[in-house]
Image 1 (cartoon, rainbow, N blue to C red):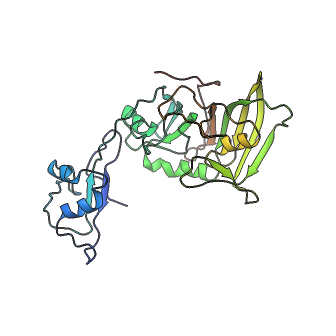
Image 2: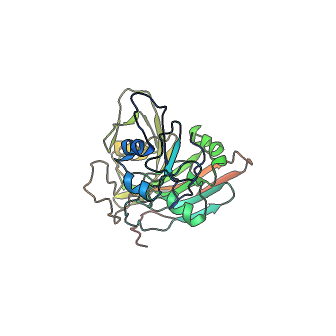
Image 3: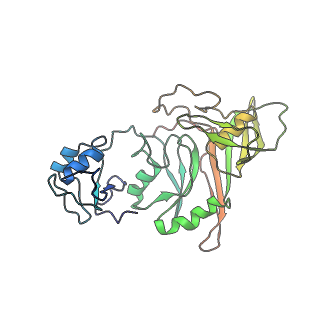
Length: 306
């Protein structure tokens, strides 16, 4: 692990870092500028960063291009961020205390900074808005999924709460809008083995493999040729509920991946996936209280414009 960064967060993001290795025949750098150019030229304008003093040592002093090469040295910097389209929809803060922040996530907003979605992520936006530089999510919601997301306010609380999710001691309830399939016997518990192939958008079922995904699917309300379903996952595989609903012949409405990958621009916010993380409940590992948090959103989900 690196030491604490000498640079403050920028836009709610920690500084990046690189560490110099022991000098060897295969690493013939004479100065720090040569090392940084070899390691980082693909990602940043090294010459420009050096000229502007944007690389710093652990002391906070700027790295100069002709500084002699120093092994076992951390260098810190902030990357330039690409412009991003604002994701509409309010982040409702359902609950906040010293240890937890619980929010109701709008669709299309990434939970964590990733790929093309950095500034437009729950973590980055809320670290700035709430003044909580160590805020981090305790579980995942897909970018297109809406609803309850629980975050730890500081690193010191993260382990205690995250272990509840890892041990399956969190009760999560989702609701989904999907076709009504006459003759489908519900409730049903779906149990199978799900996996994702690297480089592909869709997950798939591996027949005859050990079970690693389990969901209880119940019919709640009929809506003409559609219905609202109550979904209770007992595991947390990627796209688990979407794949289990698809396997029952009732794919979730407005799903851009299942049953087929839709040609939808990444900045098209008009048709939210009709899947809502509607409630989370657990026994607090710190004080033993029973906790329950409910979404303020309801199905069907509408496009959010503000």
